[in-house]
Each structure stands twice: as C-alpha cells, then as structure tokens.
Image (cartoon, rainbow, N blue to C red; front, side, top):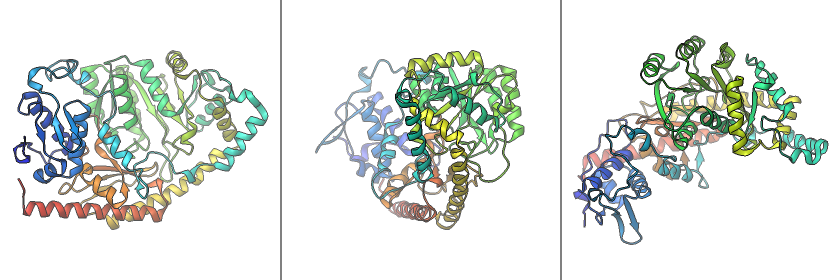
Length: 504
C-alpha cells in the first residue's frame, strides 16, 4: 500500500500550468513508467492536499480526470487505486506516444474537461451567487413583447408557424437581418443571410463546412470556450495566438500562417470573451490585409458587438471586408433571448452553399415559431428598445462591479474596465491561491466564477477569473465580490499557515 509520503509529485507553483493539471501529468507519468503499478492505493484527496500544501479541489479534480481516462478506480470505503500498469502495455492503443507526429491531434480530448464541467455544475447549487454564466439575466428579456409576438404569430399563421421552414431561414426574418446589420455597416443581400439555431450553431456549421479532421483552426489565446469545445468535438487542431490589449498579435499570427498555412481564423473583435478587449480600427484593417495576403478566411463572432454602453462604435470586420474573406456570425442570444436560439451567418455565395448543406443535415431548419416571433420583435422595434434599456443597466452593473472589486479584492489584483459586453477579466495576485484552487473555497462562501484556464488553448491563465457583472443587480454584485475577497483571504491565510508548518 502506498503512503501519502511516498507519492512524489514535484509542483511548479510559479508556473502557468494549473496545479491540478500538474498532478494529472505527474501521476499519469508515474503510472505509465511503472513507478505506480496497478493496484497501488493512492492517498485520500484530503491527505494528499495536506501533504502537497495545495487545495483539496486540485486533488479531487486530478483524481476525477484520471478516473475518467481509466488510470484510476475508486472503491467506496477502500479508497482510490491505480487501475492499470502503464509499463505492461495495457494503456489504450489509440493514444500515441508523445513523440508521435500526430500526438497533438490525437491526444486532444474530444469533450470538454470533465472535472471543470463538474466545477461549473457545482456553481448552480442553491444559495450560490454565480458569476460564471455567459448569458444575460432573465430581467433583460422582453417577456411582455415576446408573449405578444408569439400570440400574434400563432393567430396570424396558425399551424404554418409550427411546420418546417426553409433551411436558409424564414424569408422575412432574413430580410430583417439584412436591414438590421446594415445599421452596423454590413452591406449584404438577403441571399447571404442564413438563420441558425443560435450563434454557437453558426460557428459549428462554419467549422464543419470549411475544415476537415486535423485541419488547423487559429484563434486568439485566450478564446471563447464554446469554440474550444467545437474544435475538440470536430477533431480539428486549435492553435491559440497570444493577445495584447488590442486583440490578436498580428506579428505572431503572420509567423504562424507562414509556417502552417491554416485555412481558417476565428476572432471575436468586439468585447471579446473572456477579456472584453475591443480590437481598434487600425488593427482590424491590418488583420484584413494579412488575411487577404495569405488567403486565410476569417470567422468573425459578433455576438457581443451591440452590448456597448460607452466609447466609440467600431464597425465589424465584415463591414470593412471588400473581398468576401470574412464570414460574420452573430445572433439575438447574448443580447437578451438565449433560450430562443436564433443566430445567423452572413457570407459569400461559395461558402454559403456549403454551410447550408451542413445546416440541412444538422436539423433541417431552425424552429419556425421562434424565427417568426423574432421577426415580429424586430419589425415592431421591441428588440432595439430592450437593447437600449439593457445597455444602460449593464453600465450601472459594470460600475458596481468596479467599485466592489476596488473595495474587496486583495492588493495586487488587476482587472480591465470594459466599455461594453458582460465580463470583467481579473488577474489574482500571483503570491496566493490560483483560480482553480480558490474555486472550492469560494463555493463554500456562496459565490462562483469562470476559471480562467478553461479559455486557453494551451497552458495559461492559472490566476485568471472571468466574472459576469451583468448577471446580478448591484447589491448582489457587491455581496458576491465581498464573498470572493473573503474566500481569497481565508485560503491565502491557510497557505501562509502551512508554510510555517510544512507537512512535506
């Protein structure tokens, strides 16, 4: 039997790789090398956390991930054991060695990190003030207008509103979207508009239409978690290029394009998720020039573009595109109606037909009733009125979040000041618990957030967190930040105490 003191796990506490990831890597390596043979009993999570001077949630997550990969097994009342001996060749044969030329593709998980998904699930417990979600709050929904629109559509169209629609979308809605985006500077025909089941489906369909398995998709790093999920599920190689405050680093992007010739670049230039950065006009033009020079199609995610409450409006990339190299996606989900699932794609004819074929195979058409109701809300001006009210309230909540962060977060914490969108991108002090380690204590205090590392295509963001300041009213925002600051101080004090009396 293995004692806690016999499990040798060297940790780099100053590095960017999260502690739980380091635990996974070291324990897996010891299993595969035969250092930990099958049947070895591992320390209890609480004991190993105490031994290594780390948060218990880091050990719990590492054990959970290793169980899901088949390296460990848990037995009620007995403990956690090594399930197989990596030295005897019993490891899965479809997992290539690290020196394989295809290792990066084949070793990439095909589903999101299960342990992190479990952490997100825990944030939905009663009494927890969740700052983790990526959606507007219910009070932002135009409920009265939507109810009237649904009733009016059913009265007008009857059962026709419940039949299949054309795959391309409800004609009047496509016309309305064409007119809607023209106010943003995007000039297009109705034949360039495809209605989708939300922006997420729009992005997924573009990936399926333009990329094959093992093709390279380039994006900002960090990037939208949903795109990471899509890339993993569709088995495309996702390469993140670092950002600065103006967006993706064009010097590094050009070098990567020269070396690897990717087919597609995914960017969110306005109120980027998770950082809330806005790409300035000059860099947008430089990005378009770069894409045209190397013939790389740009997939633009404009879902937060209209959530601006201060500062100067900057046109979407598609509005600046005179060669057809940009595919624009957006929708009415982040604005106010996430559950209605209406999004759209705007692109040129060659790409359009390929995406329509993917849409046809996926679900035939987006729900007809939802399309007609959104069309009516657009025609009646209800969405525009609601968006204006929502943006005023978002500014109020943003200001409350900035004041609370200044008041309750520990010295050395850094955050951005967004001019729109939903998020604060916060960096915790390096001398203290990282985001994953803090999470469990924060939950016990009744607050949750999105862990920064989940937004990175590789290792990074260990001390970053994303909070949705639009999710709660100012009083609840202050309470949530107060709880979060208290959780950090409590855990930091525990660390300091353990350093005085090390258990290693």
